[in-house]
Image 1: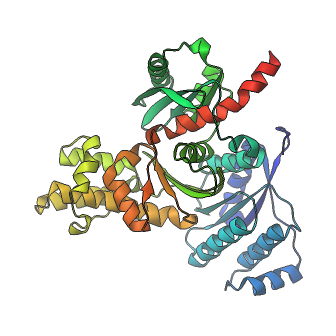
Image 2 (image 1 turned 180 degrees about the horizontal axis):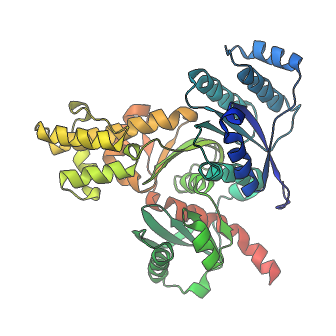
Image 3 (image 1 turned 135 degrees about the vertical axis):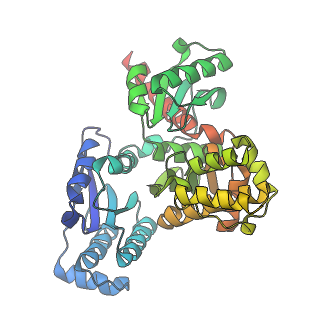
Length: 419
């Protein structure tokens, strides 16, 4: 799709959102990113045939219908730009079907897919980033296929915990900036100035700008950014770029301060992805709290954990409250700081595996990015859990900024034509 004004058609495969009131939220999220939801048309004969061929037991009529709709998409009898699979998180049967449909579509088509387990409290705001990512992949595949940065570009990532900036010049990182996120615009000014100083450049030298993260719209509007993009596509692109794995399969894991992302990537383009987290106990926040409890800086937590034995300490970070209790109990029982640090890293890795990594197919190489990728103990525990060596590329903590700067370079020629 080349026409930016044309709506992206997202096929919906679901069970229950219309009964829980969530369908209205799904439609609102889609409309906000110029997409339209539709239910693929199938006949009763199609449903019976697809259900029999798929070989997966399901009692729900809606789930049987979802299976037939998935087959119609894969067979090409129904055309779509992307697929959204949604089922209630309380239903184990739906979870199995949702996961199998996601894998089936991903393995047998080029359609971008996101799956989501909703509750009656799911809002359009919760779904917005996922819908935005789906439309981006559908509309901007050529841009996402970009493998080299050209010219001088600036990428800004306004995250929940930190704000980062990167300046790239002819496929090289020449300036970086990093600061805790306080006031969104103020933090952005700080990191941009730091990056410009390091690069020895002026703002007038910048040819294109990209923004991502929670504050992307506010910063993008102020700086007249060329591309304002959600972090799922930006981070996956930045990850495979920095890891030099832009061809073939890869899995990107980003454990952030507020939410986590797991993305299956094929030739530099996201295929399936998930984001979120049930509690901050499965995020970087828990590791920050752990370092404070242990009386060490967050930068020391990784090396400390590498000296410990994670299985020596029981740890529950499913909820940050229970996680705190586990930390207090472990220290009160006399466990070493090393073992407690290792256990905290293991607990976060386990929760990310259970909450996010079940929703994507893990393909090697596994690439970890974001600030938590610098915590060696967490990377080590994730590698043990997945039974593979986890890749942490250079500048991994600047992943969103790098991805933004890389994609922004695709707009330089367009700007020159308009001058």
